Length: 264
Image (cartoon, rainbow, N blue to C red; front, side):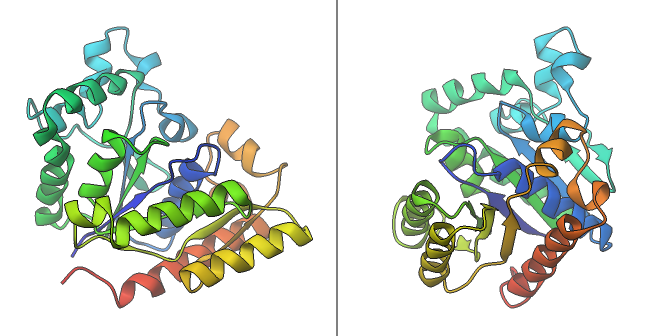
């Protein structure tokens, strides 16, 4: 059964898109069938994988047609996927920004992505689907979290990261998202952008205590992670050293975490 995981944080700059991209690439390297869905109109994830539909098409309607937009609106199906680094990608576009306005005018559309991905699940084409959201608590985040079975939080070991992680955890377990999607469960988070400082280790200990553990730690490597985004290559494909090893270890921890929590 296909497991759908939304990678989410309302805080920007926490390596959310990088986590979704690198984890998906690592699982694809392990032989799993992966669909990666970019639901962030900034399209950083898509561009970091070499897919820029806003550059590809001069017409905004053509760009929008390559995204989840028509399926959410009910005016079309999910688009043809792009094959990148051994996984399938549904890219995003700046035109997806307009979708939030539509969601506000017709709240029933927030289930549009859920219905579209349920059709994908029924075909059994993928082992895992990952949805990358924009950093918000608005309707686009709700759209992605209503579509998911699990939510994965990238959390840097600082006050901003801990505050965001704690707030979203509460909304998933007993708040807004729980009421809308009671089957949604939260996974152990990924610690991102972790420097080797006493303060960071203190925050990491707080995060581990709050969530009962983590999937692993992405160390602060300014020479690797920004260059992976710029070179449009996931870390598991770009690096053969410690960076690749830590991402592959996170992928193994993810598989272990969901083994006992797969959708029946």
